[in-house]
Image (cartoon, rainbow, N blue to C red; front, top):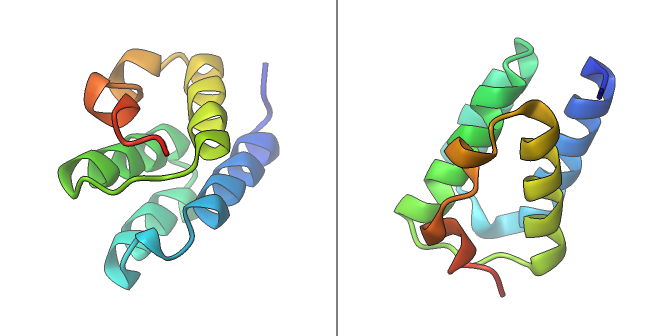
Length: 88
């Protein structure tokens, strides 16, 4: 089981790996969920942004997203076919 600190740390690492692929407002939306401890919503929101905007991102970030989503029990909500197609 992951701790709250571990989930937050991993989500911050994912955001770092996404880099400039998110606009300021998009990043702020994800970070807002992080700031109130809504880690699942943060990860789902990030996945939604990436897929809706068709933003490719690195494979190591994808692997981290998949692993964290599985640990949090939200894999089906986060790891979609569309998200998988965006992996570089």
